[in-house]
Image 1: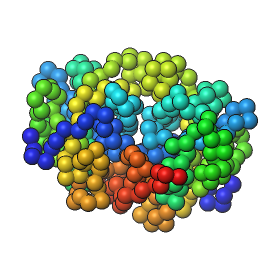
Image 2: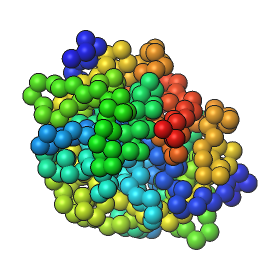
Image 3: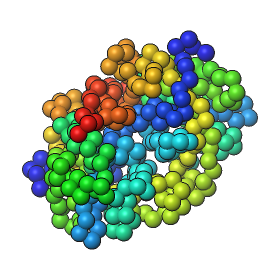
Length: 193
Length: 193
């Protein structure tokens, strides 16, 4: 594992996605690995941490999640702009070499079967909480976060440090048509009011 | 209605929240208006547009949403940093004058009973799709977007224009402890690859 990666306490895991970044979803089953982009991923609870992610019926990733019961949500960086767009706009069903063409490098963490995407700023390993009605009606999947890690150059001590980090480590926020925004400057509200 | 506000086509409404901004939830029932902040709001579908929002059982807003069947999601701006924090950290249950103290100004749009929060950059009027299991188990509410509007100084022609607009109109992305990030610079992926 990259020397910059360190575990994040589960009670702080929601902070990894609280600012609404576009994420990558990785999943694996029966020897097939896949990665897709998802703009529609959101924290759902603090403790135990849970999240939601929308996974369309047309994606290859969906069956991998449903069959394995596991997936990983990771926060890609500005340096991964094109990779993020490519894994979100191409399907493994039409392009069996999609991951290689997009430049995706996978790595493993001991104790987790799902592969993780290298070069991201944060990773949340999730166990699917099966909810057939949500999955079938809304393409909505709920996961319990069972492990979390960050690149300590940009998230450490329970906080993002985008303002001090290399801008290439910033998060991506997708709109449409290949148009993203990077996360911007830090703002502090008065909490004593 | 402010002269800068214009309707957004429903098929483009998802773009108003696709980049993961922290939002304000307004709701009204039996003469009680309330507004809360929510970092956990996410698009769910394109057409008809739907979204999810997590509304805790401890909030006053929750009963207003459940009893009226309607709510409005709006995207607050950098200029509303303190307002957003204040309506997210105080409850109408303890502070009956919460909205006045936070400086919230409400306005109406013809045909919608729920009040809208002035000064935001985008508004999505939602009809609750009742899902008792999600609401009771996960505090997760699903809404169908039935009307959408934007401040045309920052969202027009179906696109955000944060890069050309006054930075005070940027969106807010909450982490924790009063710490937010503003949306940052525009990035374009190559869509012809």
